[in-house]
Every structure is written in structure tokens, then in C-alpha cells.
Amino acid sequence: MSIKPGRLLIFFLTVSMLLAFAPDRAPENMVLVRGGSFQMGDDRAYSDEEPVHSVTLDSFFIGCFEVTQQEWTAVMGNNPSHYKGADLPVQDIDWHMAIEYCNKRSQIEGLSPCYSGSGDNIACNFAAGGYRLPTEAEWEYAARGGLKSRHYIYSGSNNPDEAAWYESNCEDRIQPVGKKKPNELGIYDMSGNIWEWCWDRYEAGYYNDSPVNNPKGPAPVDGKKRAYRGGGGPGGRVEWLRNTARYSLDTTYRSFDMGFRIAGNTTGKKTGNMVPVEGGTFLMGGNDGGSGERPAHAATLNSFYIGKFEVTQEEWCAVMGKNPSYWVGAKSPVDSVAWNEAVEYCNKRSQKEGFTPCYSGSGDEIVCNFGSDGYRLPTEAEWEYAGRGGALSGNYKYSGGNNPGEVAWYAENSTFKNETVGLKKANELGIYDMSGNLWEWCWDWFDKDYYKNSPGQNPQGPAAGLRRVMRGGSTFNPENYVRTTFRASQKPNMGSTRLGLRVVRSAIGGKL
Ligand SMILES: [Ca+2]
Ligand SMILES: [Ca+2]
Image (cartoon, rainbow, N blue to C red; front, side, top):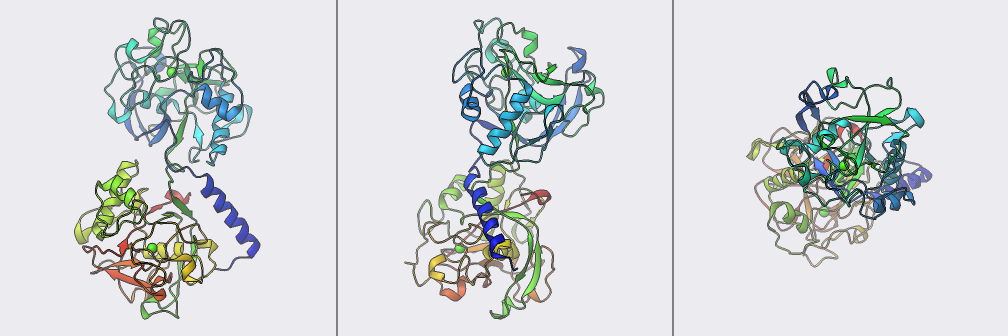
């Protein structure tokens, strides 16, 4: 791969900015709502809640609270609310103001904004990583408690006074968020307190022919009205608090009891310490290396994310509950983990963070679903592509430079113990310690002759074997072993004090 220096600089700055702003975890005060199917609507109430119908939603994030005045002011620099208080929901917000807040907050946090266009022609990119309003279906599913639903009438209870602020208990004012009982998912005030704008245009008969999967409201034929949900407050009647109750207003309508709650896609979030690697074609292996590295051959890879660091002992413990490492240090890479255990870690971490696990089966029959969005080990090709700096490659011998002492902990500069991750110079993509520190497990079965006939697209290693690939060399090894093309292997049931792992995730649909 060759690239002009000017272009390289721009690429590098872009990647650096992405890294600098990428959030480390789910946004504060948001919960993951696991996708699933539910029965939307209610046949016993108003006609616009009929018919009850099946809806299936993807996972999403939603705010635990209505957007507060403190949050609003931090982003927008003003406070339009009638009832003032930092921990009160922001009020007097029309639909367009809510949209503007979502985009602005996305930009501030380095997430790609969901909304484009203006006036009556606002479009929402539901694949973007930024903040947005929930759809009506998302709102109702979350209010009902998602997969944990206990089928209450109001969000979190059958007793309106337990779950909601409304006319009989709110003392004629808007109340601070989070004081009533949360619902099954830990979300507050979905019933009562302020009304909450949703994304959807409103049509009373929409449920008669709305799509089953991720309904997003009627097409723009119904004018300016948008749906809102979950109100109460002063003058709020008890029947308005129901999870299924639907209302609509012109998008420019403002009132002291109107605000919103944010939602977000699971894509683009939870990228904690994961570096986006744009797919591309590179020359894998090298004709100057050992026989297993030959021949150099073209490999084309899809985009993926890779850990900026080797998995640390802290990260391992948070998922697996114990630390197997010989060389102990919370920020040092975990060692003494067998390949099978590394795979188990990936699946467990995926489940914990709401991703779909990649691995199934057991022992030598473990298979990897590369189409899942969960954590997995890199393929050998992904490891080498990322190690070489991907599309930004400077074609160095080691990951990030030609001087091994600058980029790697290896036999010449180490005390043989694992070093804290991230202390040496990062490579072109901002990834640390790919050369040296610990060897890193890869997915592939090892075959010394694999390069002689490996596929050109997304090679995933031989179908079977005795040993799994490990890459990058360790603090015990001389410089030859910490080259980006050097190949080695280990039996999958054997851990080593010199061997750890680094995780990757597929970029689903090619989107980073
Ligand atoms: Ca509310
Ligand atoms: Ca390493």
C-alpha cells in the first residue's frame, strides 16, 4: 500500500480526532434496551391504540431520565424551562429544539449526528452513532420494560402514584427526575412528569398496517404532527400515564409540560478502547521472512474494530471474575490464558455489553460467526493488517516503526515481565504493543504452508489443525520475533506466561 504523505497526514489527523472523542463506554445515564418482540398497543383503550400487533425491535439505548435542564444547558447554553431546577426535566421544548439538541450533543461527544435536513424535511439516519429521539415503538417497548416486562399499565407499576407524577400528586409543578420508582429496566418517569417527543409522525390508524420490524412511523403525508408520550405533571390525568397512550402535536408546539428523552443506536457506542480499522487490500507475509511468511500475497479485508491495547488483567477480571496471570498488574495484559478461555472471554464480554456472541460449539469444534457484532479474536490476516497500520501503513518492520526499542517491549529492553499496556509508541492506527509485550492469540488454525493457497478475501485460516496462531512476540523474544509478519503457534488448550490476547469486532454492514 502506498499513500501520499499529505493524504497520510489528513488520514492520521482524522483517526486521531476520532480516537480523542470516542466515548469509552455507554453514555452516562442511558440503559441498553435489548431488542426483541412485543405486543404493541391496547385493544381496551382508545381507538388509536388498536389493534394490538407484534413489533420486533433492534437493541438501542435510552435515557434513564428525561433530559434535564443541566444537560440541556451544557449543550445548548440556554434554559427555556418554565419550572426551573438543574435536576428538573427541560420544558417548553418543541420537536425541532429536541432534534437540534440531539445533533449538537452528538457533535460535542464525537458521535455522528443522526439528523439532517431542516424544517418539515428532517431525515433520521438510524445507523448513525449519535443521539436521537426514540421511535414510538421504542418508547413503548422501553416503557413496558422490554424483555423484562411485567406487563404493568404504567411504566414500572400498576399503581400510578408509585410510578408517576401527575395531577393528583405533583403539587402543581414539574418534579425533579428520578424520584419515583423506576421500571423493570431501571428507567424513570416514562409515565408522568413531562411529555416526551418521539421521532414518528402521527397517524391514528398507523397500527393497522405498520411494519413488524423497527416501525418508524408513517411517511410524511400527515403534515406536521409528531407523536409524544408519557406525560402527566400538572393537569395530567391518570389515563394519560398508560404505557400505550398516544398523542400528537404540531412540531412547533411548546408547553411547560413538554420535553423529551434521548435514545441512541448501539452502533458507534461502546467503542471503549477499540480502534476502527478501515478495510482494504494489503500484501500479507514477506518474501524476506521465514518460510511460513512466504509468499507475500494480496489479502483483502472487511472493516473491523481492534483493541487499542492487549486485554488487560482488569478487563479480564471484570468479565471472568478471576485473574490467571503470572505477572500481576491491573493495567498489564492478562497472560496464562488458553485459546479456549480467550474465546470464552470474548463471548462473555459480548453478552455483558449487549452484543451478539460470535462463538458457538466447544473444544476443537468451536465455530466463529464473523457476521455477529460481538467480540472475537482477530484472524491472522486482521492481526497483521492492523499491526502494519492498515490503510495508513508506513510499511515498517515492527508495528509502528523500524526501531523495535521504540515500539515494543522485547528481550532487549524488558525485565521479562508483562509491561503496563500503552507505554511504547503507538502504530499508524493508534494501536499499542502489537509488537512485543505479550504474544496474542489469533482465531486461525496454524499451517506453515497456508499462504501458498490462502483465499484473497477475508482469509480465516485452515479448516482444522493442531495449533492456533499467535502473533507479535513477547518480552522474552529477540527482535526477529516481534516483526509484524512473524508467525508462531500454540496448542489451544495451553496457556503461557508470555501469551495473551487482543479482541476485535466486525464492522457490521461494513460501517465503522
Ligand atoms: Ca415522562
Ligand atoms: Ca503484543
